[in-house]
Amino acid sequence: MKRALLSLLMLSLVGLQFACAQSAQSKNALTFNHAALCVRDLAASNSFYKNVLELQETPNPFNDGRHTWLKIGPGLQMHIIQGTCVVTPEKNVHLCFSVASLQPLTTRLEKLNVRYTNLKGDAQEPTVRVDGVKQIYLQDPDGYWIEINDAK
Image 1 (tube, helix red, strand yellow):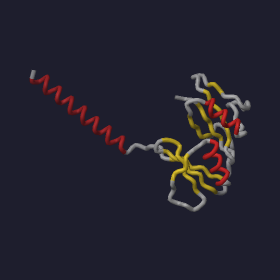
Image 2 (cartoon, one colour):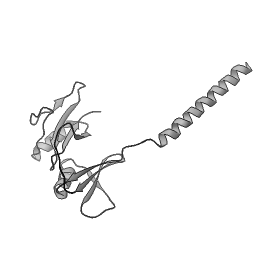
Image 3 (tube, one colour):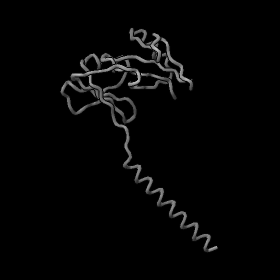
Image 4 (cartoon, one colour):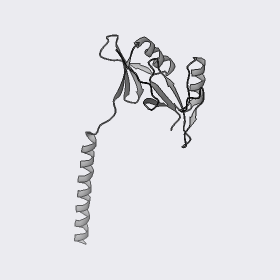
């Protein structure tokens, strides 16, 4: 009986030590912080991201007229930075945002005359993935592709 309790205690201590080591390891794990995009016209990009996609601007330390920081999720930001940019627009290189339902968004995009397509390029038509998620693609003023889907 004493051996069984001692063995159980030893296993518990080993398990606790393993859990503590895992916790210490995760404290130094990489977490995503922000994405940065080079844009040619900061005002046009600000208008697109703030008015069309309705992203909220957050304070930034630069205040130089070349940077805008936007909130893209809990603890996540996108920095748009005016500069000399070379964009090779390809749908396989894109940002992706999710919404609860595409319908209110596509209705707003249509009212704003913002063109969107499905993956194949058919205008004003969502793609329905094999897992049932609907997605659309649109481009920002610099030609960056943005996917918006209803993934849960």
